[in-house]
Length: 127
Image (cartoon, rainbow, N blue to C red; front, side, top):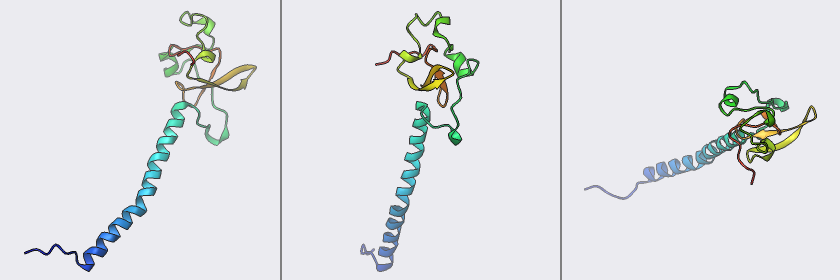
């Protein structure tokens, strides 16, 4: 017949396992959640550029820009209907002025800046 009582050695082994898990779990969870937060910042386009350098502008010849028919001047796009441009889009956030033009970030182009007067087919009315 098997004895269900835990002996002293078994008790201390179980305690050591619990303490080990309790010590490692916070570090593991922190690593998971901090990398998720970092990924979300990049998707929002609000992640700071590496080394504190200014974020680059979107290149209209970039593959993503071509896929959404990005143009730097909404007046040159027949799809913009005259009022649809980055400044009126929900994905756009004003950041600064470059060369006398307002620029900001866009969730479509993570890590890059767009002109406020630009347009793409992902335009979404600002709430």
